[in-house]
Amino acid sequence: MSDLPRPVGDLVDELAALPGAIAVALGGSRASGASDAVSDWDLGLYYRGGVDLTALRAHGDVHPPGAWGRLMNGGAWLRLGGDRVDVILRDLDTVDHWTGRALGGEFEVDALLGYLAGVPTYFLTAELASCRWLRGEIAAVPYPPRLAESAPPRWRFCRTFSLEYARAHARRGNRIGAIGQASKAVMEEAHALLCERRQWVCNEKRLIEAAGLSDVHRLFHDLPAAPEALLAWVDRVAAVLSVESDRARST
Image 1: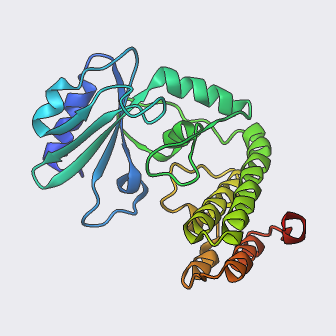
Image 2 (image 1 turned 180 degrees about the horizontal axis):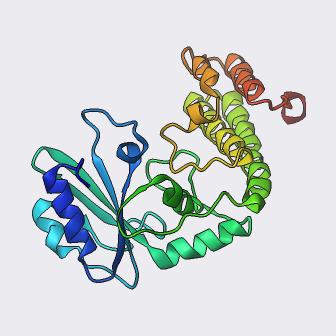
Image 3 (image 1 turned 90 degrees about the horizontal axis):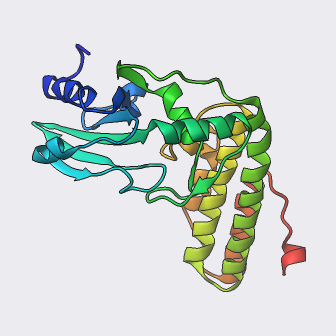
């Protein structure tokens, strides 16, 4: 931990000493080596049975277990001197449950603030493989073959469904609806591609680039307004995603 700023290192020690704490991990761009001068510090606190974050209130906003939903759970947004630190809670019973489901090729997708296509429950398993352990350690699992088989067709069903809704919005001249659903379809195809490659993904921040779909960005530079042009634009997005147009059936 010698490369951590001292206030962050002290916080790691404080988190590890909390009753119920099992491990503390460094995540996000700091763990992946993609950080820059303004990146914050993401600390994952893995616990069982409950944890009390009251002592952290002196440093910022604290959100108890369950405050952010069944997957993201809760945590704290802290300021330690000049460093911004996000503490993210992970209930190990929840992590174990969804890891077991992922090993069997099963997952669910939750609507979560900040996510366009939703967050798959296996992201909890993905985090174990991508973080850097600072205190304790939770064993990561290899990408489950059953998940690599079952996830792509499910994501692609969602992708095609989103494109159909994008076309429906386009026919009505609803640019926001058409562009939003098309954007969601891009994310869903990216998920499908990464699952096929057995490549873990924790969030959507670099999802498109990781999947090799960067070229699709150019289609979002100049967006048409007229319904027919907007409908043709959705078809171009579909073509980049290797989805055949079915306008004849849907018109």
